[in-house]
Image 1 (cartoon, rainbow, N blue to C red):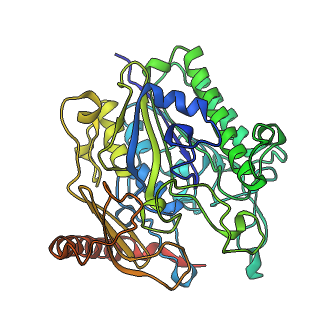
Image 2 (cartoon, rainbow, N blue to C red):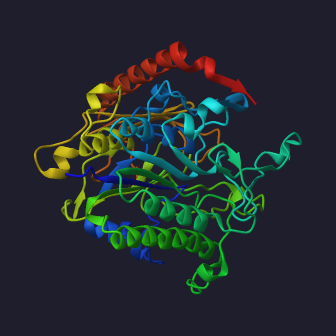
Length: 442
């Protein structure tokens, strides 16, 4: 039997509530919904981090960010040098099984030669290396306000800089993805489609904006950006169907973290007005360890093989590496991963449930056990000094994390706090021993 192809699609700062299959009512995403209709829609999938780089590192490596060498430590303007081959990616693992591997779109896991996609298991890379770029000029502007950062052009074909000024980046990522599928249709492939939408800057062609005349102008741009992604997902799926590959291709879709409420979305300097996407009923956004920052839209579909269903158990993006590897005939026990294979849940042969899930973000730490979630030193809004020292919630009865049970369930609270802090201590130890030297001040 031919090995299945794998397509991983990631969006950027897309909220839980910004797909129609996840509850959006003000716009439609019919192509992504079609994938959900063919497969498993996760109601409780989590990113391993509420910010871009660590969440991407975890998805690709199956490890918590600190164990992958890419942590969100922002104090003092420090940035990690990025992912290196010391930590194998799913691309590295599938290459060993004879797969052709490619990434189209956003990398954001390091600029140095040893941190780039081609050094981390990807045969082909077409996209950009930084965290965000202008959608038309492909220029990186972030940080210019410090007076020390000049605009930097950031568009690459492998390690060669290319210039395609004027092509809308979302459409370019789709075009390159479809081309990759066509060129490798006769061999097993892994394609990582890393859309940067709907991350700022808020850019969209008029043809997408005109689809939403009934929305307010700010929500209209968000909807248009996501609609462009949805069209791209449709083009990718249609190409698979045309080439006869649809029933032998695993498609996994997720956002990297919750929606951004950064004022630079609109460059108006109004931090108290929120322009970004929606996290639905959940509290918090990007940067927060409350649900809105880490619970993400996620879908896994293998046409004709996955039973259309909703999975309500809690899972985390570190599970995707061992799951895909097992589905492709590999053995996750050969790799050091923090996630678990979801294959028993997918094929109905058993259960795949975590005893605990953990997160960290600067001073915040969180843990989930069953229906209970503990957040230590949590922030709902990034940059605010006000923090919640201990917040325990029952996510079944209170998914919006409105009612603090810390005083009502002191024994459970103490147990979860001890587990969370012990996990964090181990992360800190691993980080200090293996990766702290990779950090550089910027």
